[in-house]
Image (cartoon, rainbow, N blue to C red):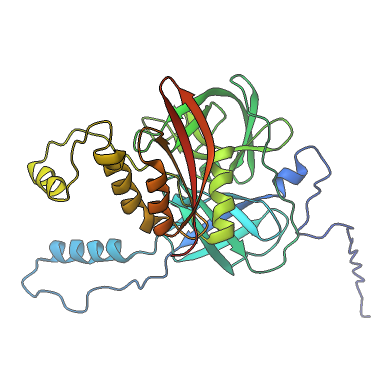
Length: 353
């Protein structure tokens, strides 16, 4: 007599798909706005085709190993966050060494591989990416309020490969200068930040972005309580320009001061007729400002602004005419009486290249 065994299989269907995690909690939308940025280089890994017959066996092994190390495929990961439907902000150093980028979103099962680098500012260490497919996610808002020392702050990212980790700390200090450039400064936090957090948001109590994590100050590359963050006003300025033009153009003044120690450099400057002119600017007070306007004009793009101050003691009307000849629309925007002279602020807008 044959026996039959009936096996009943119960399949349970959930209202939430495998890829979805509920975002109906305080930090849910923040988590759903943060992404993992993965980078890799496509490289060929191979051994040398020809080996030196005079090479000893152990030397041959080292030679092959060294070749392998030089040609190994590098990879890395960092953090980023959506600021709208298609654009992601991250650190430039997270993406700069890679020729293939993949984005992993919090509630999306598959890697997003169709990724475009919109632009970046290497000095600030900010980059903007664009995903070229429609993926459901939330996005973060920039904070309007300036954070204060002692405020609670939150860092969200993938430090030490612990993906989507939220850590809490305080704003330890509100200004740390970048020693390499006067244009960049940081805010400091003791929220836990490690390798993998780079490019992630530092958030206030309302889940708004007050900065982008970028540096870890530590003797051994691990968290010891000092994290540096690019403040939102600086990031927002760079990101807005990158989205509009593909690059970030920094403002600068046409006067550079310093002590020249190199003799060849001194001779070159002297040959270019950059002289120590008296404070009246030479004849009619135009020698110095004319040189500045001439040197800066090629660097100003159409619709770019040049703002300078001159004096009623100089022939400022002739300076205005000279500025117009260089392709600017010129207006006097303010005047200020100062003792026996009047300071004049002039705005010049570039009309053409």
